[in-house]
Amino acid sequence: MSLAQERNLRLVRADETAGPHVRLGDVKLRNRLVTSSSLLGYGVANSKLIPYGMSPISQLVPLDRFGAVTTRTLTVEPREGHFTTKDVWSLGELPGLLKYYGRALRQVDGGWLNAFGWCNVGIDSYLRDYYPRTRGQNTIISVGGFSTEEFVTLVDRINAAVPAGEIAAVEFNVSCHNVNFDFNAIIESVLAEAVPRSNHPVILKLSPDYDYLQHAKLAARHGVSALTAINTVKGLRLDPRTGTPLLANGFGGLSGRAIKPIGLRVISELRDAGVTLPIIATGGIRTFDDCREYFWAGADAVSLGSASWFASFPGYALSPLYALRIRSLLRRMENYRPPRR
Image (cartoon, rainbow, N blue to C red; front, top):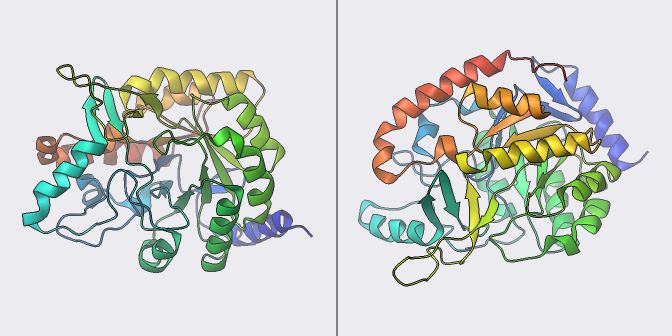
């Protein structure tokens, strides 16, 4: 029996005792509303007073009610990227934190431009220090690497620490623009070698700036369980006075309301091309109507990203209002059945 067959058998056995849920192939969600990678850090903060690395809204919305919570993208070794791995700051250090944010995150027309660059504590630290405190959530662990060997190592370490059926899935981020790497060179070998080793379902995250139709077909061929569409769109903003990029990385990933039409287009094109894998849609989702648009386009679940979790710093005072809106959306989505296509 292959590793993939053993994984599926364990998932079926775990499913026999599970409560109400939604199945997207092998991926088990509590409902069709999940959260996007990075917006909730590792699903838990080390500081209770101010949850650094997580939206302030996270303290006002029960995370265990989401279909799944996706982690920040994790790499084999800790990585500063264009930000910092530090997640506990004193009040006196806040100016330094704001300076970091100014280099990695900017609000733009209709959304946000970010270049955090996969800043994370590394897979071992996450599995040791964070994951044990989030077992009440349904988790999608996002992983990223620059070689097939790194993805194999990430899968092996998750297999060793997390029993089959204990998380929703592992998401392969092979499409991020903020790390300045051409993932086209490795994606097929990553899928061929890392997916069969995983004891957990694998989700492939697609970018509209890559050949997403080809990548989706590769995913189906190599046993990927579902797709996330879309990753952020590569973008650039310049200081109009000096012509220098606003972000330390130069280019960044555009998210928010501005990319919703792109997300809808990509999902529609995937379905028109005959892609049958389940799709988790993300890109500018904020309201129930946004969710329904994505379902009509062909999505099976939807993911809340920056449009719902980011705010300008003065806007954090409105966190309770944002939380009420998200709680209302959660209630509607917990029993929602998408229209038949």
